[in-house]
Image (cartoon, rainbow, N blue to C red; front, side, top):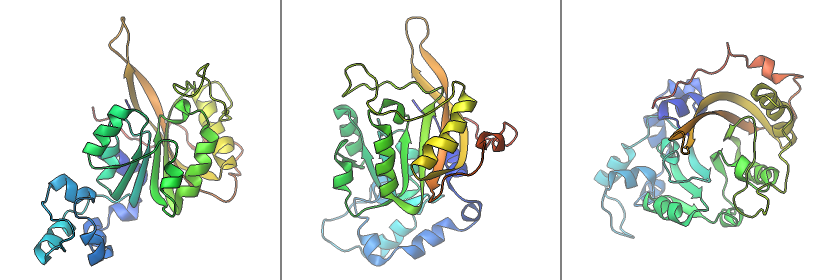
Length: 275
């Protein structure tokens, strides 16, 4: 299980100028009456506060003011897509900073749980078709690329669905060790992500200077966070380090010869775990 908090997400995704601004006032001002009406029962804030509503009935002024007062303490974007959302625990961290939340998940049990949480659950294999005409401000693929049969194809699809100034959040346990649970007879991906190197440092450098630029992305920030996985007879659980990368669209490949040298331990974003 990937472990992070709202504070950690805020440090990774929210720009300094946005952090210091009145996010609530800006959120309210950006929402039209129609958008606020559209949040009845479907919007994240309305759902979490369980405000009763009648289908098709416009909100009265008091109800509209109550919804608009439920603005987030931080703002990551209007639309969030979490690919491979699991039980929704990690999704909730970012969902409070977005207005519309879509998710994908292969497990039928987890899909039911995600629906119970109020998220729109898309088909794992047809989500591109289901979101035709929609682009997202934030897309997350947390510990998904090493479980994906075609990771480069997935990243190309994400690039198409990301807004011009949107953010892609990737989490990976490094050194990279892919294991495809479904759709592969030998549990190996049919498509090679293209990571080179054997150490964590070498692979972060490969991702930043080779893999992501070749797919139209640039690295903005990266850090390490805890990843807890199921244990065995000797140990209840294992604690691994997840490398979390925030990327944005880039028309040109990165020109640095060794980007990792620009992100030494002294400069590494300090995001401490809150367990």
